[in-house]
Image 1 (cartoon, each protein chain N blue to C red):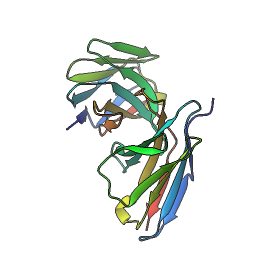
Image 2 (image 1 turned 180 degrees about the vertical axis):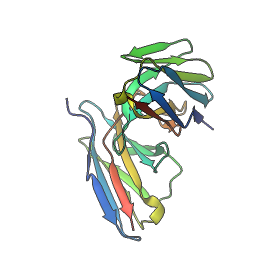
Image 3 (image 1 turned 30 degrees about the horizontal axis):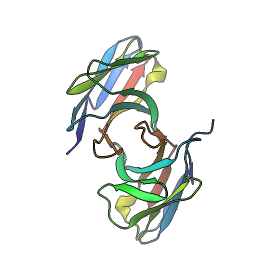
Length: 110
Length: 112
């Protein structure tokens, strides 16, 4: 069965304090790994897709990396507006359903 | 470019009632997936529609049913509502053969 585990559950940073979020996964044949950002009461906003180990994607202060067992979302010099829940998901090899982790709630204090 | 839209935004129902939620996919997309997100948890896959047929289904009872129309929009129906059905219901759209799914703002359902 596909599984996604995210850590930590919650993370508090000071503005400018860089850190990383972790997403470990179990799947027989990864078709794709996705990162989303979700603000309270809103739908997830697509950030990145990673398809193979060694792949990296960047967008502003965010950088996503992928290995054969996990993905990291690196946040460089975060700002308060980066505060949100970050969700990781994998796509099932048997179809296109997404299996999500529980998310990491990030708070960046000014 | 219109994104995924959902209606209504919020809904309050009584236990035992039935509810219908609606979704219009992003322009150019033909596949719609529905997810349930309980507070503090990640979204859980309910089912996916493509070419007006249910293609995949998650671990949800038959009380959850859906439909896709020729214009690719979709409905999620839930019968005999339970208190545990209270959640944010998310619709996501994609283009067939592609894995990237784009989500709508969600419908917040409260069952009392």
